Image (cartoon, rainbow, N blue to C red; front, side):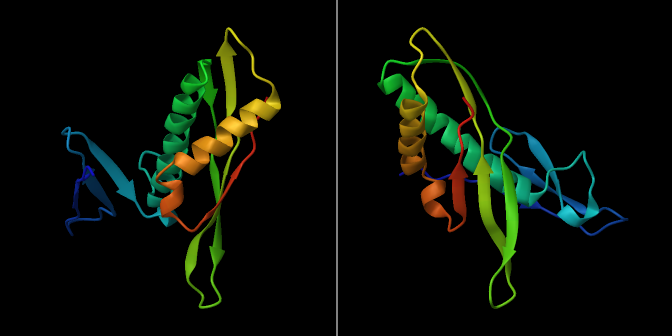
Length: 140
């Protein structure tokens, strides 16, 4: 199994409240605690949602291709709901995805699209790695 690595760094200086993810390809992502509301920075919760939604997208494209379907576009605005355990620990309770997929050529019906999403969800390794409820509601 492949191993994925990255480097995370934070330095206490000045009034900086962000830190960096150093990706293997040399890119950096600036990250900030979600309570600061700085739009130019990614929040860890957003990265979590993006990782799950991206994994689902890639799994969906694979499943569609296996059925000979050609995806023209895939759009989603995933969101998350935070929750609190009985021990007062905050966690990502639910992630909701509402992908809108368009196809070229053969146009599958909604039942077939839902089945593709279900298989994609089952094969998404990030989805199987989390305890958050994942709700997928295809649009069209």
